[in-house]
Image 1 (tube, one colour):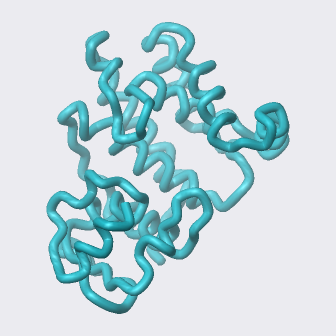
Image 2 (image 1 turned 90 degrees about the vertical axis):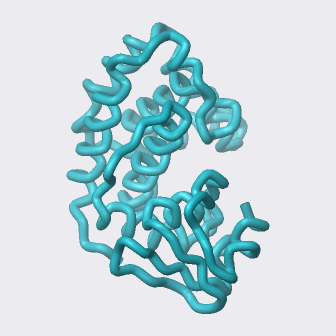
Length: 208
């Protein structure tokens, strides 16, 4: 797994996303993201909520949502996006260097900030050169676990090989392409299939 400073990556990705969103029009804030049912404003609300969470507030919120994780995250995102987008963005900036997190490995927060940033950027036609080590760490983390993301099951029996990074993982029919596309595909984003190739691609596609 790539050696990174997780919080340094998280803080840098928050700052970069905040800058990219600083000049959006009202119409752009309402753009659907790669996360079903969430537009740009609500997905940013989710990122704000994640930056606030601690293990106690996470479990309290989960209990208040009848232990339905997705219900809790939707409720939290809606609460953070209840005001104007400018207010949500200001709060996201304020929490940019926060180090609170829900229970679980800090690498989950790296993946959340990298993947959700791309969930927002792609529909808006924005691009970012993410640090390669951050992409590698995210892809490695997701492909070793089925919790929430399902990356382990999704990539089972496949070899993933990056064309723009020194990274290869797994065994079986190959799927090759840019590191960012591979990371998104491991995370379950159909948009990540763009630019991928190889005899294992039909299998990976069928699992998204």
